[in-house]
Image 1 (cartoon, protein in one colour):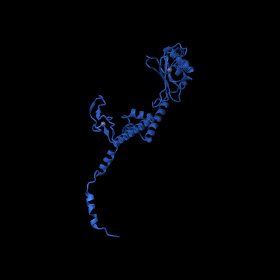
Image 2 (cartoon, protein in one colour):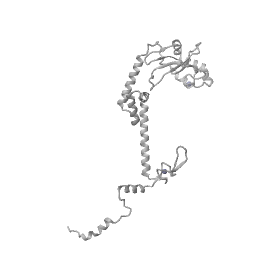
Image 3 (cartoon, rainbow, N blue to C red):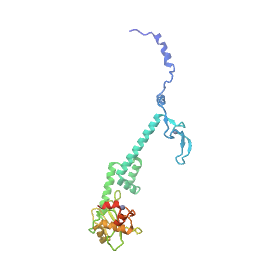
Image 4 (tube, helix red, strand yellow):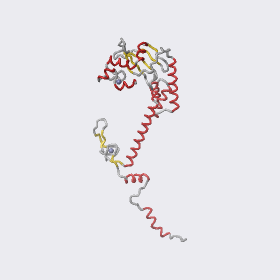
Length: 275
Ligand SMILES: [Zn+2]
Ligand SMILES: [Zn+2]
């Protein structure tokens, strides 16, 4: 192998130091150059107007901060912004889904926040992370179930009357000589009374007097037992009796308008619920 003549390398020194037109000097420069080669796109913040418009007054208040008033931003910036927005909305949706699936737990935490140290710590965690662990959820649900069992155990013995088949709504006594109106409430979750049946006065301007209630798995405890027995014997007729007294559907509260509904005493859709 021949030793290269050092003289033939002379020119290389010049090449090393000679400025190469347009060559990026640093990594950041290279990035900026790459971004510049992609055509800029419309600014997401001002929709290309270059002007910042107040969300409160709808009036332009100055130069758009995002695009510095040019109305255009690098495609890369727009893409990063879109990705960030998509991630944010996915996170929000996940949190909303979690909340919907754990509304009983959230309701307990909310109503006991600041009154109970466990609830307060869970509330703080919800504030920072948005969700709770499955273990925490199980602990709350176990406590709620225990509470519900205690409430039911404390119920006085029932009258033997079972209202569980009676749909929620307003009733009067069929063929009754009384103008008594009865309201049946059946709260669902996340209410701590879910599964209970409440009987109260259904008069429009009444005092909403409570007659009694039925705990899950028990029978009714309270007043107006003979009237409830008559209602239970024919719920459709009882609901219709209410409709005839008041002129409104006992199930949904809508005004009875067409002749058929007025005659029947129940609205057409709600009538089907008794089938
Ligand atoms: Zn802009
Ligand atoms: Zn109705």
